[in-house]
Amino acid sequence: MIGHYFTIAFRTLAKAKLYSLINIFGLAVGVASCTIIGIYVYGELQFDRHSINADRLFRIQIDNWACVPYAIGPHVARNSPEVENYVRFSKLGRTVVTSGENHFIENRGYYVDSTVFEMMTYLLLHGDPSTKNI
Image 1 (tube, rainbow, N blue to C red):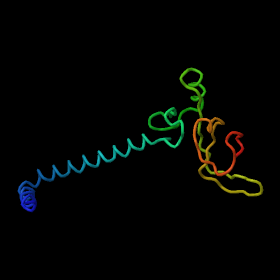
Image 2: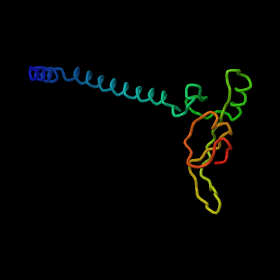
Image 3: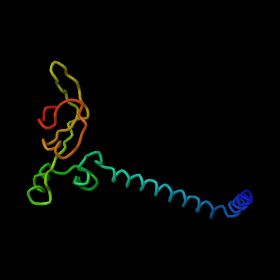
């Protein structure tokens, strides 16, 4: 029975080539679009879900870039009573880090405010976040 359906489908594809091409192309574009939108939405819903207070964290961004003026954090905290705290991240870039006698190059570091451990949860290998001695 299913072989009969395949035979009819191939005959229809052979008769109306342009119509079949348009339908198959449309189906492919639709499936690809739904997949890309689904991956994007999933990524947005999983943003910062590793933190305990994830339901209370919000990110300020302008035009899909998380780069905003550095003074936005204090300004929003002063002028919006809903904002309890803020933390700013600034990419460090390539720099030399010194620990005792050891020197090494770090490519993926960030400057952050001291409130980062009050707001977000990170697993630390060394140090104590309450004393800011990391």
